[in-house]
Amino acid sequence: MEYEAVIGLEVHAQLQTRSKMFCRCSTQYAGAEPNTHICPVCAGFPGVLPVLNEYAVELAMRVGLALNCEIVSTNRFDRKHYPYPDLPKGYQISQYDLPLAVGGYLTIGHMGEERRIGIIRVHMEEDTGKLLHRRGDDGEVYSLLDLNRAGVPLLEIVSAPDLHSGAEARAYAQKLRQILRYIDASTGNMEEGALRVDANVSVRPRGSEELGPKVEIKNMNSFRSVERALDHEIARQLEVVRSGGRISQETRGWDEAAQVTLPQRRKEYADDYRYFPEPDLPPLVISDERRRQTQGNVAELPDARRDRLAEQYAISAYDAEVLTGSRDTADYFEAVVARLGDGVPPKLAANWITGDLFRLAKGEDGDLSGSKLSPDLMAELVGMVHGGEVNQGSARLLLEDAFRSGRSPRALARERGLLQVSDESQLSGAVRRAIEENPAAVEDYRGGKKQAIGFLIGQVMRQTRGTAKADVVRTLLERELAASD
Ligand SMILES: [Zn+2]
Image (cartoon, rainbow, N blue to C red; front, side):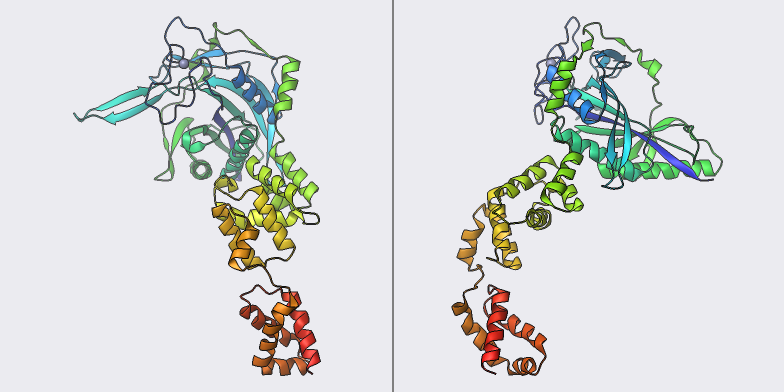
């Protein structure tokens, strides 16, 4: 029997606000001492009242809109109860049956072969604290509690079970992060825990509509581990069902070192959480006016920008895709293009940015933030290449130099003697020497083997350390060889 895997992802993203979800404590606690960014509200003292962070709602709405969701006009906060030491109140303020946004999608894949992945819901909640387990001097293990993270605004984004492989799940998670970053909703940094991906995986006979028992996978700390963990889990489930076994509904964790999924604690069911409406917060009513305003704050999204760049600047679909990998890169490209001289094709700028500049920047998503090469300087270099002022090899050297020093490529070219020489009087000496020193090639050329001129051009280039302009050299050689015939 043919089987297929069915995957849905639950992604938690920290919203990029300055203060927490229900109090004024700062979210900038990275590197701070434990429990220095807390107050009675986020530390869960009795008798305090939460006050909703409106900017968190703005960011959450942007995400809902960017994911093509319907914004629920009257939604609500609920208490989700579970006893765990990192949860000081004994419950988390979340959203249950009336989430902020429902029924959207995002697209994965490349132009021409895109696929829509459904988004079931987007809801707001608060983050928990963090437990640290340390062994003391007496050899005992102590659990330490840091509440700096407690109350940081989180968004949970739940996909439909539309994904079928580890690679698709990875593509979905990466696309989601790209969108979150484009609209300034989240840093999406997985290594800092600002983006956490959990998955529900099951297998079923191909063509069947029913879902098999779901296994939840946790502890995937990078996009690569998302792909590997899910592929591993799919293979494990297929092996079980093909040998006549049954999959048990459970939670498994990805063990990065062993590259396997292992059983974790039993999954709580929704009933266990004893949800009820948060009595200290009124229902959240979103007016049409507010919705429209927020829509206006949603930046141009990656797919739209990719299509526009390809069209507007006549660059390839591939280049447009790469250049819109991050908003910073797309901004950089457009800033360079705006500074190009008349007649310099944007395509040339795209080639230099996606090729040599990316290689130098090397960062993930082609992050150019470490570069001292401003768009002005990049445009100058591209203009020099287009105008034939420097050859390709020299331009590479100049790019590297300017990338590190932030100096003008033209000034550097002058200093290093890399400007191409097209002045005939400066080149005629080298041309004559090439003819004198290579009688065999000259004889070949005059005997009708016209391609022998390539060898002579090479000799001139060598003498001039590559700075001679090849077409000028060719013309001079042809003239010289014809004259002394
Ligand atoms: Zn607080």
